[in-house]
Length: 366
Image 1 (tube, rainbow, N blue to C red):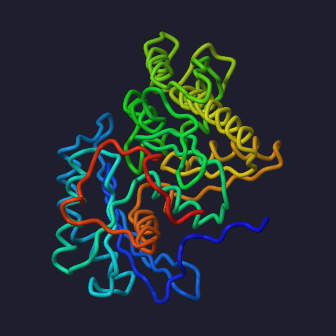
Image 2 (spheres, one colour):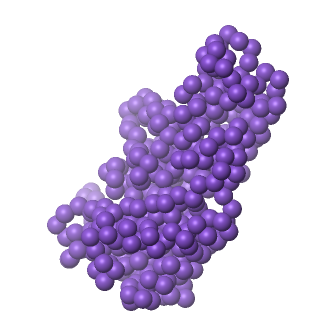
Image 3 (cartoon, rainbow, N blue to C red):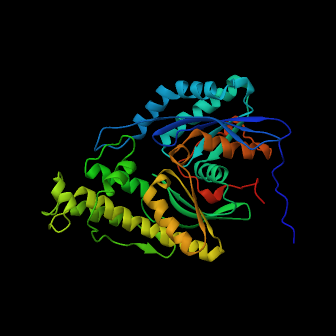
């Protein structure tokens, strides 16, 4: 039987979308173009991050203030790099949710304002679907199992009947949130990101410390692992400021922040690989697409790659330009909806902190 044709109509002219992302501490604006006779093209992808001092997280009010201060510069830079004006933009796409309330409101307000000023249609976008569609575009993955790992979400997803179905997820906190909080416990910098700094410290770890391995069917639980890792920092053998000998000599009866970072990564990423492999077996897929900010972690990609290789499969992942929250992923998901004839009235262009991935009707896929 021949496959059904794609419901997505081909563009008859160049279509340009401006995407705005601000669901957490990253403020992004990106310009995407779709052509009738060429592949889609990223024209610009500009991002500015709100970074707090070591040991501190980011509060919604302060994050929203950061977005208000930087949004004009970020949008103008995105348009300048793309070589287009607002008059040439066909639609304005923004993150409807999920995310932090105050930053989401700021981004939605900017999108509505631009829409009124330039008389452009508005496309509300699910943040998670934005990650997936950008990952599919950049990697060329056809119909993969998706592991979505970020500061606010941890989900294993498969596509079926115009929905991204959630096979498994975290039962408490997201993996990125867990890493961020542990980075604060051991005093790691938030620049460029706590998870990145944990990854670098883990490369120097020598001792694998026992931590709870909490997979529950297709789901995972991460809060207990964080608690156990924090308890280790109160142990008399813990060396918060170790010497090079204490780091490198594994025979010593001590352990270091590097060992805790190493143990945390190995345990948590093994859990994520396990539930992803279960989903692959269930749907018969040999492709895995890793999206979300934590998806840029090289160790996670390596472990997932080893599992996929054993199943004669392949892992698809992107670098930090597209894994970490950005405006271009919102533009890509939004432009697909726009090509299907979707847009929203101004009164409907709100935002919400809770917006499930499987709530979105993915009209552009068969």
